[in-house]
Image (tube, rainbow, N blue to C red):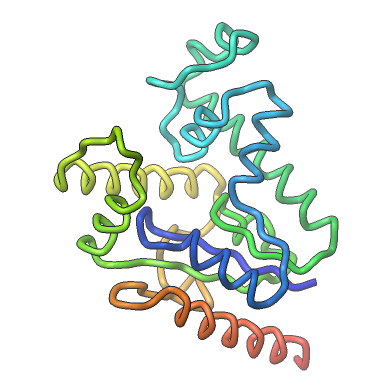
Length: 208
């Protein structure tokens, strides 16, 4: 079983890169599917689960009626609960013993015993802002400064979540097998290069 984990800065294109790599290598792909599974299991709104997963807690997010009062005053406890559910979901995915690409969720740390190929995806701020603008919904009217502030907040929360998990430092280059800067890259071309690198890495580790 070969697992590729994609950790990424918000707006860097890591989600798209992971999906393309999975398609090239014929692997299963897990990203928002994990959020959906947790939301269905816990009876929560998917946006709330994703928000808590990013360390943003319950503030400003609507919960289902069934869960509202239970989580109203939970604060960071809700985030920890979601992180534990993500851990269980990742372990269930690993138990399937299928080659896969997993985006986010601290999979590189949680599934460390499976010896995954760990990728960190980054980009310069201008590129991240542009990608966020291109991917935004029509009703979003955020300035570039507001987008930059949101990017920094989400990444800061991801780093905090890594601290809760008890793993290594999120984003530190020495903790990944490959660090990819997507700035000025065509994502299709970059995915081919990353997929080829991953294949060679797995072939090398199998020999050792």
